Length: 493
Image (cartoon, rainbow, N blue to C red; front, side, top):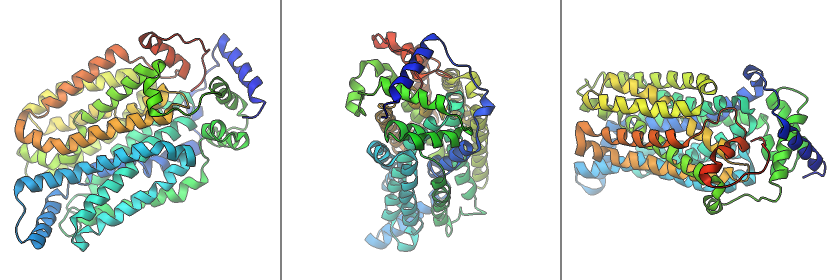
């Protein structure tokens, strides 16, 4: 770090000890470059995650038939029903195992290449996966589809950590929550797009289902074309690459103004407090008492987010509606309505997150889902669409909280922990839901209701509000529960 960092940091610390700077209006924080960065990053990352959640639903019947025909051609007999169910649930859920791998390897990647370059390089996985899956039927190999799902999962695991990290580091704290919701909105848009393209009139037929997987190449290529023209995270450039000039230019680009001395000073102040602190490992993070309850809260929130039942609906929507007695020809369009409702709800959530805060949306979303899971147990048609509204109230907040709870040196490890929980829970839902549904039948969603109740109860007693709060203020909110004394003055996250 340059020698000038010390007096600049001291000045800011002294200023912050006496009071907080006046806030800027939320609208003034949305520069054109910030909007382009968030949209491009999300389209090539979280969009693909959402798309791959729903894309396997529509062609399930045709892909199972492809599996059976391939099996019969190889071994001379048809695969039995239980083996086919297991093979299909593995195909669906193996996406999460790839995601877990991506979440584990993302820390050294973002440290070495940076946030933006990681998102760019990650498209290699997306293109490779798209080629494998789209050509699996032509090659007569269902293994190619399964391998493609794993590789696509690696892409999603990396992007769901790198993208929130990038967005949280390029955005002013006044709109950090709203910008973080871009991740959630594009997940919903991806789900909806997968449902649209899966309609019988487009790619939802026996001959055209491979095109559903070939489409993955398009968002990846768009991101590769646009993202190189945008700056790297200014915080990464300043704190990890010690490149003040590039960091200033990045701030100027994202904030849309020439004078960024104050923003640079804020980051330098944090750097001064942490100047002797190296990037922590996951084990070190778990052993740090000062963030113990932050880690627990991220684990609980991310686990409940995946185990609340929404992914079971996206993975197996057609089967759920079929069990509800809906006409098979009508199911694709009823499914489409769930994706549309969720997208609208996610956009609404993004608009109000800075007004209502994270805590009410999380607790309220889980609480309302409990009610509608009870209704789902009685009827599985209209209530599924209503459930999507309440799932969407909080679907992006876990990623926002992970970026808000931890200081710069801890964030990569924190995102790795969050990603690991996220993907293991995702895998469990994808693999086990067909068997849960078979065993409990109409009562299967009560399992998710119990998980939502546990999550809402925990968050009610533990989670503080974090909107418009600095890292130090959030740390102080957890200090008593962590049984630590924080003496450093407020600093900016």
